[in-house]
Length: 247
Image (tube, rainbow, N blue to C red):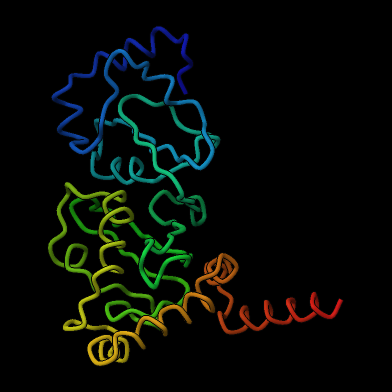
């Protein structure tokens, strides 16, 4: 990582043409004077650094690496241009693979999913970003467009209308929150949730909250990512709570 006094590194950053940067990362905001771009590289709590690397070979595979979100304290490859800061996300690589990882996702505020924590499994295909990533909920969620058993997501922007202009930030800051806020009961993966939403919306909200309390805790999310059965994990947590009360 370049230090603030790395004049050569600073010069290399500034030599990247703005048109090139915009074409590669059209949605990324680059730092402009009087701000010092290196001041934003200082690690901060709850911030995740989006590492951007350039390569003249296999640019679409390089994009896979660019989109993986890393903690600023993790060992990073040298930065060249552009970066983006995100808050409240944790990313865990699977077998150190940059193409398979888990993202901790929080339910959007002012919805029945508020307060819930889910581990989202992400796989980036070799053709990414020209081909959409595969995503799925590891711990259970009650939603018309999410399969309760497999965690598969029915979302047109991922399954049908994906564009190489989209990235992980779009998925976790826009697409998934919007899906939870505005479910589509007319195209369900969970028929029970869809029927309940259309016929008894208040009961739907209540059942969503029950699932959040039981299956969408931090402990349940971690257990699901580790391959444990959620019902067993829930029972174990209940036993621990009972023991604590007995003491």
